Length: 104
Image 1 (tube, rainbow, N blue to C red):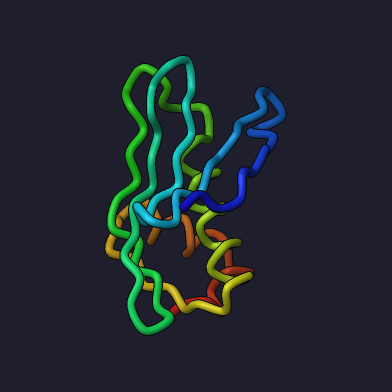
Image 2 (cartoon, one colour):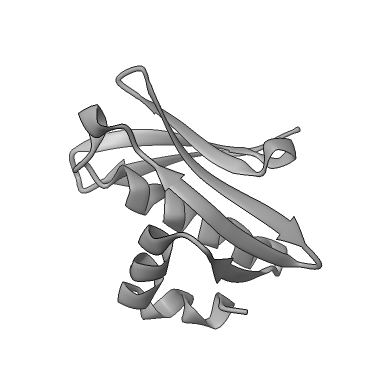
């Protein structure tokens, strides 16, 4: 089952379409033909972010940041708490205090 399709502006340079693939527990964006993903597990109302992956050829464009923000916005909308088992997502959340209320 597919969830919302989000179009976000990344660093004022590009528009990025992020698809929430609910049944697969992931957020996906295709950038220049490369799949960029954020994987998570979900149990008892807690989203655990397990992996954020952006291929080397499209890194440095803010894509991982957009994926994390999309996941956290979805968690907030669903009323879920969040655990980060992904180092990138952990650092991102530490730098964005407005999302700290989601931490389980």
